[in-house]
Image (cartoon, rainbow, N blue to C red; front, side):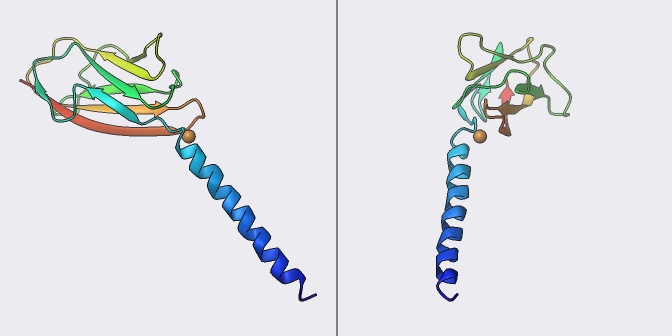
Length: 125
Ligand SMILES: [Cu+2]
């Protein structure tokens, strides 16, 4: 009777470790930006597109880039697209932007279904 208790708790530890290992390895599959154009806080002439490269291939149906102006209004008329030749890259084509500060809002869904999102700003001179 007393021997079964010490045996049970190591098994629980193993089970708990197994769960955390699965969570940790999934975290590596989350898509995070590896480069952003324009760069965060850039002050530039009006760019023709926002391009973000991610660490993982993206799920096209749920991944997107939006651009809003300083008033929070949508500043891009087109929808973002995932690069047909490189599914880790997402583009948002832009009309010429007026001078001002803009915020890029991105949502990336990796092929494992995990969603990441973020935002950053740049300024058009
Ligand atoms: Cu994931």
